[in-house]
Image (cartoon, helix red, strand yellow):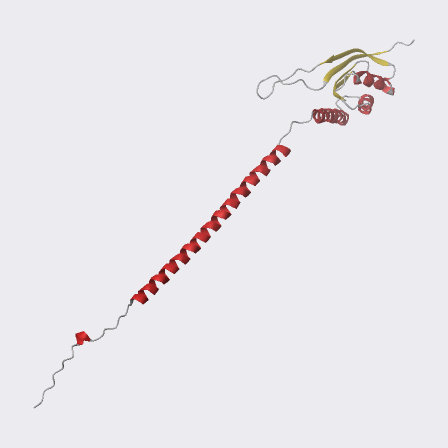
Length: 212
């Protein structure tokens, strides 16, 4: 009876190496390459964002400069004195004419048929730079008072001479003329305000001139 003896030891069988040195080196290389790609992309995005941030800051500064220039060029300016004088003159003329129209329309003067001629005469002789602020006439028209303002004092004699040419005022004259500077008020800060640009005048006691 024969027997077989197996002298082959499995321990001495050549084992397969699943992770060889070359394979590990290749995996390590791929990992490093991937890391480099990720880092490069991140650096590119960061650089792009920094560039955009710099452009935004430069644009903001340029906008601030343009805004400052526009504010300096078109900001609040001191009002023109000529324009203020024109507003005062026009406002006075409008108020005077409205007053005349109201008096005529309401009949507050009593005999408006006679007094209306005086009011029309005043309305016709309105001068640029001179306006009427008050008017009073007696029942017979022998006494009259005219209050007004003017930007130029020399316009008052011109106004009086023009009134004398009106038919209703022909042969009559004013016995008293007063001219004065209006009182200066106070500014918002409590300091004295500059005087108004006009002069106030008053004509009183109209009398019939004696025949020569």
